[in-house]
Amino acid sequence: MIVKHHPINDFIQRLTIKGDIMLDTMCDLVDKGIVSLPIHDALYVEQQHIEDAEKALKKSWKKNLGVSFEPFVDVDTP
Image (cartoon, helix red, strand yellow):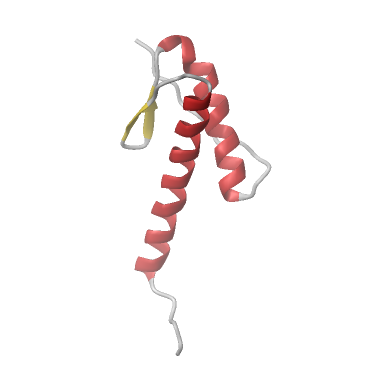
């Protein structure tokens, strides 16, 4: 059986990786007693937990992508 490269497979793989990053981040936060709410491509956390959420997201990014560099994280505050 020959499996051909198909754009939809790449799209699904990227969605899976993105989901894994978010899930790992949320689990890391739960382990610290921090509740988070995923909203599209973001996580909502209470203001006092922003730094913890940013660190958890960067850690999950590096782990799931197998890279040493960190992503740019944009933080919106009221």
